[in-house]
Image (cartoon, rainbow, N blue to C red; front, side, top):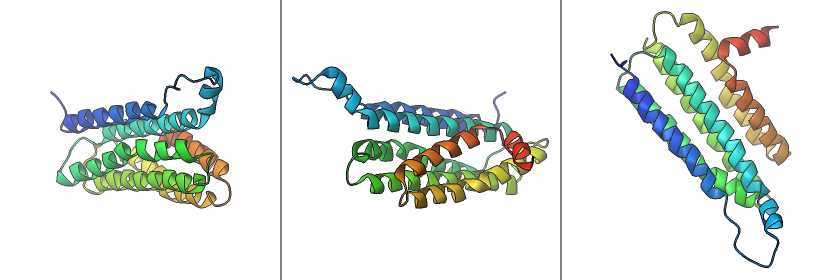
Length: 200
């Protein structure tokens, strides 16, 4: 018998899959010109970088969404709305990715990086709202109490660290994006594992 949240998970998986597929559309095929194809391909490195970075982010967001719904076993209208808001953020990712790829080497690099960082602040807030709503409304399975505390602690860091990443844009764009990637890797680690490491 399918769980109460199976349709939410199936719809969400589809949205994640479409968003991650759209990222590759920013990587263009170089036109036929007198210039070397190899040099044209190398000149597109910002597109490759932005694609890989956003693929990493969306992949890890999908992993975390899956982890949440191993604990969330019931749904209501509020959960549906908050999940849709989270998916709104996910579907927006290809746009700041394309902007970052196009402007990373130009005068608009700082603005592009700020937009990119701001997108993940919004998504981190939506992740927190979704999870904390599920906890407060007791939509979790009965065996998830310990995991719930660990996930809540880990997720609370998200918006704060992404705000730091946004602030770093005015210091160093490279450092800001590097910290972004490090934060993504941190959230790839299960909450209980990350919590035990931080306590050592």
